[in-house]
Image 1 (spheres, chains in turn green, purple):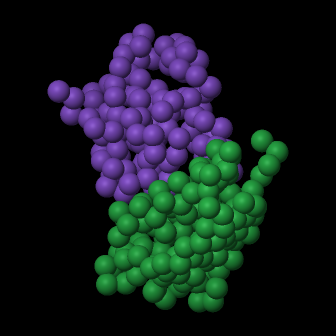
Image 2 (cartoon, helix red, strand yellow):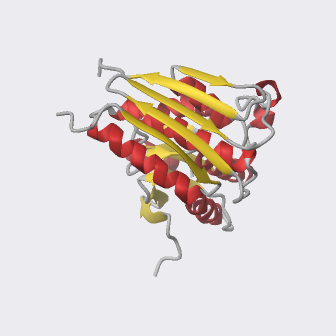
Length: 142
Length: 121
């Protein structure tokens, strides 16, 4: 049974604080569970949400509590859309080390971006790279 | 009282089985603590032979995976062996498409991991 009030939209800014990011993730997961999204889809969205928020806080805003992260979520019965923007200078994807290379295996950067690109249907960065938006279409065949 | 907060240790056929406690491993402070607790297991005099069970884990972040990579490297450098067991399919897929399944030894269940380490150690 679908108890969620769909569509569910969120447009908010949070400080560069991990606990507030975790609160936002829990709020989103609650909506997905109410909407009876599959375990696999929820896992993928949680991973993408967690990685994008932590990247924005840690790498974008350098954990500066004076800087905020802007988050837009649009959830319908069929689609999940996420946009995360930070106040940092941005980055270029080509500068991110390949986490599958042995010399990069212990580096903290790169793996999160790779995970998002695998788990979501689309992932797009703006120029200069301080905003990412992604989308996942609900899988019904499970 | 145990000095561990993020893991539980048991002995099965003289092999250390490390159970991850948290269902969701995503809090940065908790991940740091987990990393310290796991690395402490590789500090003994003998080469460490460990089974790390994910049976309770529903989600882990890439930051948590980095702690596992450091642990695996430490154990390998000391001549020991680390086996991962009971990963749910989504987590196992993460190890697959990040190519980490070639760095970690992943077994389906605890019995298979214990049997392998018992013959090795």
